[in-house]
Amino acid sequence: MGFDIIALLKFIFLGLVQGITEVLPISSSGHVELMKALIGLDTNQGLVFLIILNTGSFATFVIIYFKKIMELSKSLVIYLFVSSQRAKHYDNFIYASKILVACIPAGIFGLLLNNMIENFMIVYNLLFVSIGLLTTATVLYFVSGIRFRKGSGHLSWLDILFVGLAQAVAIFPGISRSGMTTSTALKRGSGITAALNFSFMIYIPISFATILLMIFDFTSDDARILTKIDVFYYFFAFVAAMIATFIAYKLIFNIFRSGKLKYFSYYCFGVGFLALLLYVL
Image 1 (cartoon, rainbow, N blue to C red):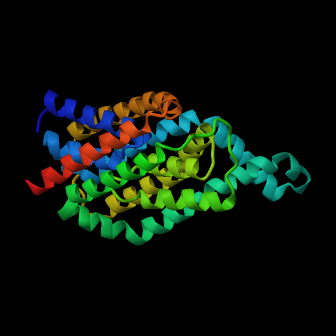
Image 2: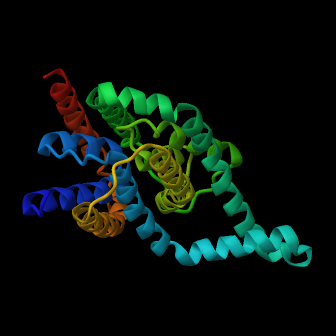
Image 3: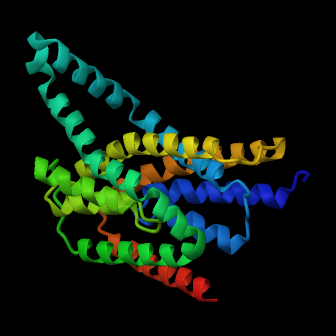
């Protein structure tokens, strides 16, 4: 198959959808599946395409939080192996530990349920997406009425466990990871800035693990060899996902502070019913 400008635009569009919806509380996985159905794009290499899209968003968050990642990693190592400097690095060690603990439930859920979810998605993809989006809409609707704290807000270890469970639930397509984790942190008393930053920080290790798992699955299967055209299309989808993720990140803090979560709830209700309608038809 030769170069097709329409196909290229579709791939770029899906990259933009991935980037925007990965940050906003409206589910990236659900929107990518829904948009693929709406624009009639069959990648013929679904798993590797998902790897490319997820890596685009992952790369952007690593760049944004690179300094913080290095700082936390350094503190974690020093606290564990240099006892004389533990007091200085205690706060960072606790924060890094909370990130790791919050990722455990999603790791367990992913290992236990990943194959089952993939099998369900083959037959009931849009139905699954619809249920997930309607769940996200319901959660956002109830959280939108909370008076958010402006400060940092302290999250206890119990709070962290709830946030981790929220992230685990979001492995189901259509359920927004950022929406579930941020909403849970806010409900548990965290401030908006702290809740969003923690949500994105726990996204990084779980996304890295997910990408590795998808790569393993891809190389284990009898996958179709990528053509030069595939690589060309996927590259632009990757770049689009990176750019869109960065732009959405710059907007998300003001969106939460402005108290407009209810509009995302209404949107998810609408898109959820659209996915259900497409499945029925």
